[in-house]
Image 1 (spheres, rainbow, N blue to C red):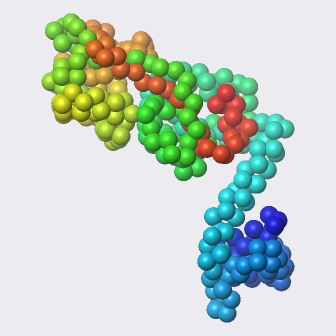
Image 2 (image 1 turned 90 degrees about the horizontal axis):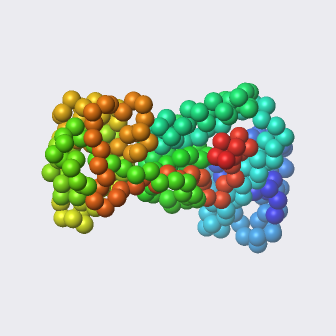
Image 3 (image 1 turned 90 degrees about the vertical axis):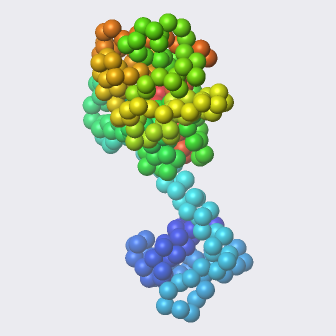
Length: 288
């Protein structure tokens, strides 16, 4: 069994004829037919039902197709990886990022990478860890940084660090002691990541804790960005949450009070990559 045989089989299935497959592979029509015939001989099974104007897979062909696609994809990934070893003289490193990426020195990372590899374009994409994890699993990006928990099917997850999450308020009364889930549920909450809502990893943790405590969380206001939420908290509209990286940042509003949760809450930041798929040279160096 050869890659060319598998490629002829996959292209014939995709395009519906040996003629079209041969054109896509830049070979003669007879050569494409012969490659598939040899594959059928080796497997002792017919892969296509002949006779109609469009090729149709047999049950054996249907069984083989996903494995053939996987083999070709793995070979192509290996070729790209080897060709990228020589240098980083061009190309694009696309990397997924977590919510509030700038608070975790991602801008400094990009600056350092660009200084070392000025010819490589860098794309940092993603608005939320749920989105980033889904994009990596689907193969739209190679790897990324996320906050756990995420849906990790098809992913390799490498935890990197923990960052404590605090209750944030302008109220002295509501920040006198560590906050229980009952306290949190009663607070006038201003929560961010409105688009992803309770799919957001930090919110998922809070929802699970609230469920165990037998209380519900019903935000007063939901919006997209932590900075906007902090602005409303500083104006006395309500209370929110923020990680230590945010509360220690220079943009954190003066006068706001922070207190930990009675059962400390942490964001765990992790590197995720698609399981079984090697990273390109550029993305591997960004990940490192």
